[in-house]
Length: 279
Length: 254
Image (cartoon, rainbow over all chains, first blue to last red; front, side, top):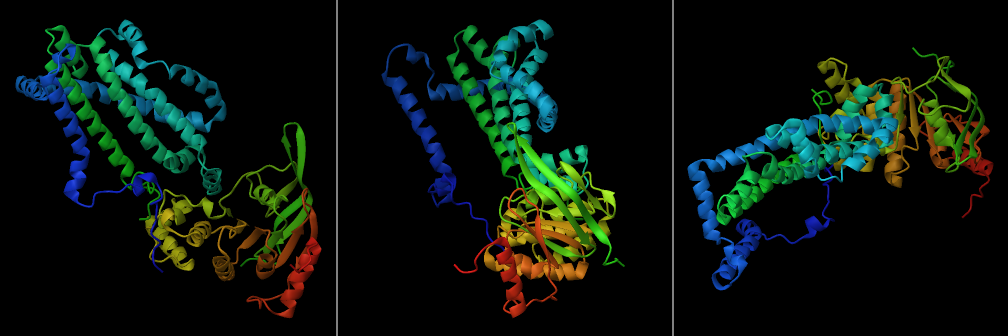
């Protein structure tokens, strides 16, 4: 008997024509950027007005070089990544178990979900004054803001994912004698993992958006600070745009990392926990 | 070994009603049934008559409104690994491989014994070569085998099968029925098999419990005194099928 091949070629993603050649496949996504950079350069060389204050692409490249040379590049990038890491990891550690429990215990979920729903649409940046009041200007405030920014989407993702778990799977787990802690670990957790991974990726994106804004106000390092400082300390718009480019590139890298996690077969069904794997 | 005349599952005066929006919907009424050790009993009834509800109560997933289910004389209060419920193939865990699924209920065994048990049931249901495949790579019939093997691996006394082959195509369904009989003859479990398919019940059962439409009560219990394998064109088989068709009130001409 031949193994049936899974065919999911019915989605738009898979239907889209792909350039056959590997080189072409690498060049197509870059061509859009190349055209934009070219237009940017041409526009600045012919136009007039306040837009002319925008640095030309080459100046931005030079600015990045300058940052790297003086050691600021590494310092600011590390500072931003450090804050995102701590705030995000704290949100994962708190938010996912909390969401699982809230999703499992309906009554607890019903009591707390409205509170989360009210807090969620408040921009994390609105917490900055309170964060500074509580933690002062510094890393802790920024980490706290990122923690809040990631916490709500992660908790709600986990909660809703648990509510969507197939009843047959829960019943099958109970039938094999699993009590609640084991049921959460061996049935609920693997069942919601694919959705969790999507939630993890989206909330890391939010965390990265928020860190830049938080750094403009609450601290004196990081890419957000670099941008606001470059403007305030002498209208160095080449450094401003350099900061923006760096933020974009690191954001893409973080997203690619999380997408890799989603795609990895070991994590997103079939996920096999140590205990469930046949020896 | 097992006493074939001993009563395994006893259902007494069982009734079930659901309450929705202030309305009471009576689903089961005064069900009395005894299932003997090692018996294969089919519960046959029209769609929506409440036969699945009955099986869920017997399995301990739903409480009864009144009456009682006892197994080996003890009342059923919750699901128990000694009695495994086989859902349609939807019950396999998509995040585990075939091996992971079959070994799900025996994670406490020493690794060697667990591996041997898994290998045994992989062979029994004919899934050699697919041990590390994930359910989404399998056909419906293969997923159904995984679920049966997962149930058998914990060595239960009783299997509850809720229209297990309902979602399969007709050829696979026939194959799966004879596979089930083969496994049943090898393992001699007590089996409660819910179906709406008259032919299916005539092919499989020692006894057929015919339920009425909702609220379901037992219309008749038919003893099927025919050894396996059954000849599906023999006069006896046809007479049995026709008598049940009549019982349900269907003319057997289309």
